[in-house]
Every structure is written in structure tokens, then in C-alpha cells.
Image (cartoon, rainbow, N blue to C red; front, side, top):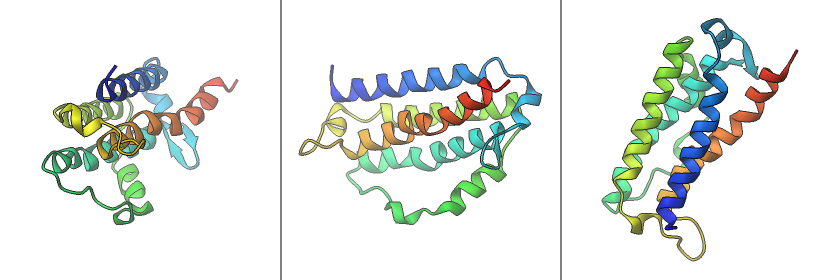
Length: 150
């Protein structure tokens, strides 16, 4: 399997697994705190915000431009994204839409953008997997713990 195909399989699998945790929830459940001070709505808005913010980076990479430096971002971005949270099914729909924009932006890059460089993931693969599969893995344990409570 190519590096690009593997990155997309990893992200697709993580997305479906994460999304399936939320499918059975009713709107009321989205208001419950699941991580720190954030409820489900906030977590989804945070993730959707990053998907939207970083989707254009794939176009930059496709033009041979550098991505923004990690230092361009601080925790105020997370706060702003969470503050824009929608509620319940609307939050989930917004999350889905943002994910598909992010995913689609990455999908148009050619295979070469996903090939490892000196044994390390390329910028495109790192961004796709980091903001995709790894970001799902970051928030999944808190949601699973919340769902498992009595």
C-alpha cells in the first residue's frame, strides 16, 4: 500500500471509530462535560476549527510552499474554536462537514506529497495523520471514559 493510501486508511478508520462513539447520543448529552471544562459540543467545535484552519495548508504544500509554523498557533485558537460551538446534532454535522473539507483538501495532493522523507513522514502525511487520526486518538479516551461512567 502506498504511503498516501495508508495515511488515508488510518484517518478514515479513526474518523469512523470516533464518529461512531457519538452517533447514539441525543442532543442533551452534548452539553455534558467530557474533557476539562469542555462538553461534547466544545470538543467537536475545537476539532472542526482545526480542520477548517489547516485544510488550506494542503493547497500550500501542493504549490511547494511551506506550511505555517507551529509557533503561529497558541491555545487561544482552541478557546476561540470551542467558543463557536454549535449544539447537539448541529455540532456533529458541523464537525462532519469540516472533516470532509480537510480530508478533501488532502486527497487532491499527489502521491509524492505523502512519501516519507529521510524515514520521517512528509509534511502532508504528518498534517493529515496528526490532525486526523492522532487528533481523534487524543480526544477519544475522554469521551470513552465519559460514556463508560455509570
